[in-house]
Image 1 (cartoon, rainbow, N blue to C red):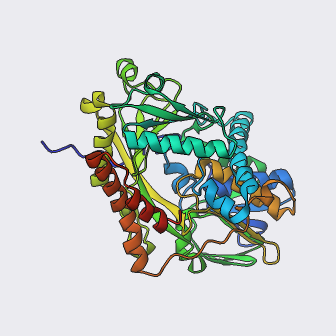
Image 2 (cartoon, rainbow, N blue to C red):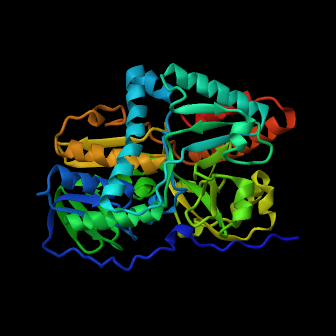
Image 3 (cartoon, one colour):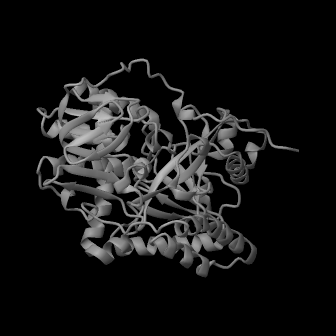
Length: 460
């Protein structure tokens, strides 16, 4: 029997934006700071810039609408995860800097919680942790090794805890559960509510947010739009995957597509079979990335990789939906929770995220030119974008702080290879991850060689 098509619409967009008044730039407008991109990074940057110096005249220019990109379409994981590993940071900057970087991410969770509460941004924020379900011996061994490795950096049970089968089932009742790895500090939220709420706060501070205005190019001291070129002392690019549309940023990142599905609201009886009572985010220990949450309105929102990379780093709205990937996500979720077999799936959506060549996000500012940027979160941007916004604000205002000395500041990643090399290499990552999972399921042995190839391609 053919599976029904999952409606192609984004769950997070079903919120009220009526309080937004259209703003526009006047022909004579000049600014101290122009920010390109009204996602999390741009909004947080504007917010903290105003706190640092309320006299600054700031504007944000957005090609589409607030939160149009990854900020409003992601899985709602406000997590402690960094795209780069602790070992990769330690290799380049030393162990202390690796620990400082991870501690800054932990502190960022507290910062987001404090700010959203004090600013009255109702974004369904719950700090319920994150549970990785371990469903095979290989997954359990990898988790044991990871916990042992985290202990070497000083992160004990107050941060990460390896759970046995019963402890895991008390939290999440996934099929074939052997155990779990619990990250106690992570949180969950409604991504678009955070965006819209933060944008309202920034506007109340006096920052202009101009939507539906395409930036054609930018350089030191100016931003060129389809209407005119605007002047500013400082120009910050915070466009994440869409950075590839600018000539100077063409190969700094690639756009990787991640897809999601959502169920209808589930009954109390169904939830009693699934768990997630405290709304921890969840995934499992497979090689192919998956991620899920229990929403505030009692749905399961579930996503994963698997959509293709498009030649030449092309981005198109036609790529935001992929029924083949959506059906795989539905099947994966039903495999995790067989009780969902007859559940209606009501939403499917997706979009691009940005991946640098070494999977390391960057926060850059050059005081000589007034040019700055931040991004490259590889899907881990909900929390790191707040850290990036704070850091950019401090750099612009010439403040020397703990976060301006982190290894992400002024980090330079190697550029991605020319086509067709990167097309072949990037699309092989998805196939290799699927192959590794298939091989481990079939043989019961770890796919060590395949995972080594994946790490080499992805800069791990």
